[in-house]
Image 1 (cartoon, rainbow, N blue to C red):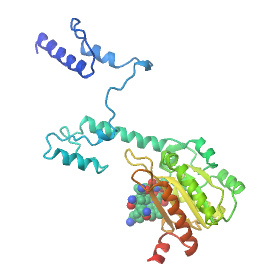
Image 2: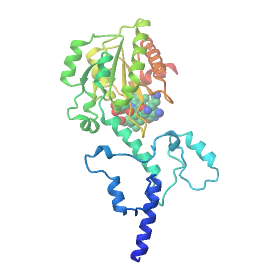
Image 3: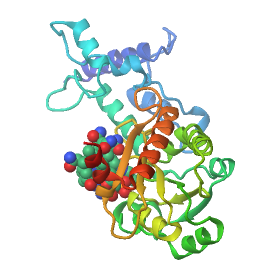
Image 4: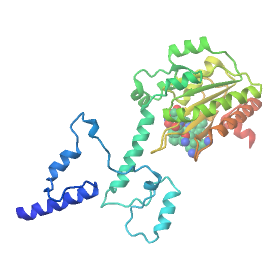
Length: 310
Ligand code: B12
């Protein structure tokens, strides 16, 4: 392409960029070159004052249900469909790829998921709720936790000692909290569900064990706790594996007299505990208490309990 023509194209693109970014360019001043624009948008390392994100937040509800399909037959119907599911429908495509908006939303949601996995539960919350912390046999941090679920199913030696010292043995109901796969789920729901469970046990005249928190926790750790403290019913509140952009969900795994060798067949789970679409944590607490009473009455849990009820 000729030099003049190339210059004209560049000037036109720059003008468009400036209009999009609402940058008022004085008419008398020649538009800067694209490289100069890029330099201006990309601040020097450390120049945080210059840092700004000029894209609309792709995670807002309105952005989530913005159709990416050009000229849909039923535009309103498509948006209504998009609004009624968290599945990524109606996103359109650019050739074989995702469109930029859909890609940004995906990456933002993935970041929420990764944060939930990587973060630790706020120690302040544990102190506030009177939970002392112990660990499983995971010693190499989150990375080891993720690749070695077997270690997350066993209490460390220090944990065994501390639990034996600080907890009463043989309670009717022992409540434990584990980070599991989402610190955010614990932080979002624990303040609501724990008091309901504790007040419910007191009202029902059930002897409660001393609650504690387990870092790097998997569901299978219930067997170790059972062997140590011999509770009649054990309730483990734990962060569920986060979905894309959804990290609030907690579960209550429960078992009657858990012990070494037990499997998930001996356990029950109340899942999807979160406000706004899941099982409300207050209701989940009440439901867990009713299930605990059922376990105590029938002296079993899991599949056997279900078969008794069938
Ligand atoms: C991951 C997962 C699985 C994985 C577990 C493998 C693993 N090692 O992680 C696999 C694919 C094997 C699985 C299988 C099943 N699952 Co599942 N699973 C989940 C999921 C997506 C996340 C669970 C989680 O985050 N746990 C917390 C982490 C920290 O626990 P973990 O120690 O890493 O892993 C243990 C638990 O995940 C547990 N587990 C997984 N599913 C189930 C189901 C039941 C009833 C129990 C007691 C335990 C249990 O097994 C793992 C090993 O102990 C949930 C969805 C949700 N919203 O919770 C469904 C979910 C818990 N599963 C469910 C079901 C029904 C099952 C199956 C019974 C399906 C079937 N018909 O075969 C089997 C049971 C398998 C078992 N363990 O005995 C339901 C439970 C519904 C309910 N209220 O009873 C859920 C809620 C999905 C759903 N919405 O339907 N599951």
